[in-house]
Image 1 (cartoon, rainbow, N blue to C red):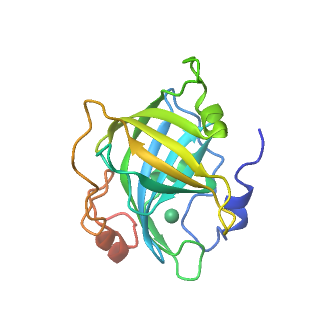
Image 2: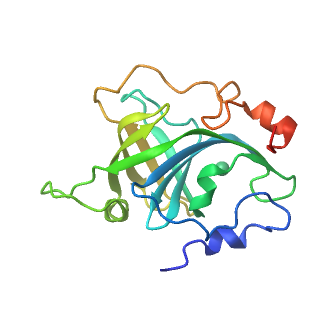
Length: 202
Ligand code: MN
């Protein structure tokens, strides 16, 4: 398999960060997703989908919405190892992405991507073509979502995508909860509580 984690490894010193180095997890029967809240230089959500043994990742400044009218900017970031879906803790000052991380939501997903003729398309192919759809089975997020590339190269060299909820039965008019008050789907802790304990065992 292509080493898509090279950039993830290049950016980090694993003697200094508690983040996982990766490479030790067997794939599960159904692919997983995780949405982390990351209180870094700018507060943002990180949406990650398991594809081909890694977590494809997007930084979503406002976070996923349950309202199909909301179009949420999603900026691709480097692939992360599968173990990252469990990461909650504090990335030390001076390290890449310094700040506190909680797992806001986690679960599995089902690929809904199709080509123009309506035939099933692997999620990776959909993303390659700039449009992918998937059904989330999380604790907080449910139902269909799409990721659509709106800009292949901005002035800063990055792609821009939009994350939008499908107008299905799980759609609501709720936006995203305040990240400073949101609780971890794994531990029930807030960002502040994780920051105070360093994310170690309570
Ligand atoms: Mn992040």
